[in-house]
Image 1 (tube, one colour):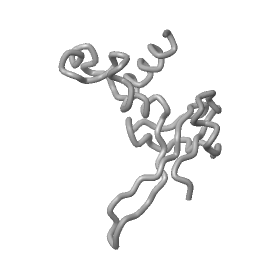
Image 2: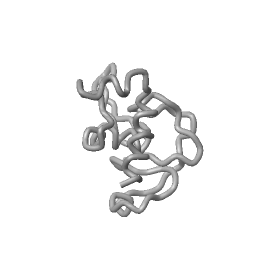
Image 3: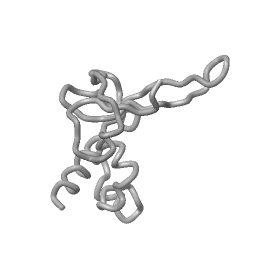
Length: 108
């Protein structure tokens, strides 16, 4: 099993050069935001190790590309839940925040 592959339209970021494209897991929940993967969205299938009844179990789970970016780069673009920004994003879902991050990144 490969550690990471991507689904959806191929992006032009260097990471896509080393990954294989797989079928989008339409309807499966994103491991970051919990919302379903929809047709046309881009993301990654990542390995996740969890505790099973008889030991570690490796699963491949989907994550929206923007949700992954939110967890790694959101603060740099002012889209985070740090104390100084908590009020700005109160009531927003993780997915809404991830899409706002994508909008801000595209505007730069």
